[in-house]
Length: 143
Image 1: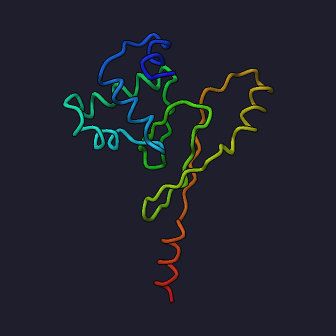
Image 2: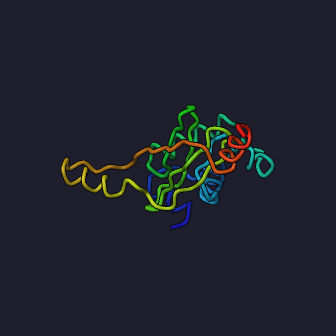
């Protein structure tokens, strides 16, 4: 399904800015923040300002087109709502993010849906730790 059809299927107006925001999120290989979307798109479009991006992200998330995950620092990251959504490992020292290719919660989600008759639309999961490079730097400091 193309992005324009996706918006129409949710009863949303198709605007240039909405398409641009959705296209940028869709093309990113990992969940992205509003600020990252702004920085990527500001040179491509004169319609880009942070308030417009936030407004469109909220509309797309409310209509279940995007998934929003908020990290421990309160920063929200967005990705297109597909069956293969991604979770992230985030280094607390350097901020590096590593994508987890499969969702470790799929089995739990199915069990919860079966047991409760809920249709679960979204979930959040964040792992934080120290990446191998930062661990190595920490080791070299103590030696």
